[in-house]
Length: 79
Length: 86
Image (cartoon, rainbow over all chains, first blue to last red; front, side, top):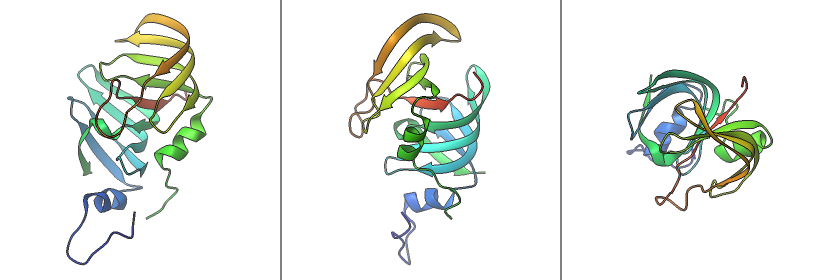
């Protein structure tokens, strides 16, 4: 994933790659968000998170480690 | 920036056999032991409990859950959580 760098442009997946190991917030397409440490991801942007706080309509849940499928992800931001 | 990076495929092979929660797009959860998972994220669970909004709805012996098929079409978008405490 790190050999896609050119001088002028930053590709979306580069941004995600740079965020590995840091705290991120992921907003889904359905009123739900996850904040935690980004452990890894693949080409579909399925994401592995650790030490996660899930926030949804029913409240907040803590999760130790999880896989989030890429199809539900709307936005990805480092915090 | 490769501090103990774990890709989803590695993660899935590591958690095979453990207790997991698979959450469907409609909010239904299946709690069970992960038997196997393939490249489409089809999932086989064992000794499964179906839950909706925290209430147990049904129990199953073995469950097959259809994963994503290619990029977009999916019946059950799954979200896997490793359960360490339950």
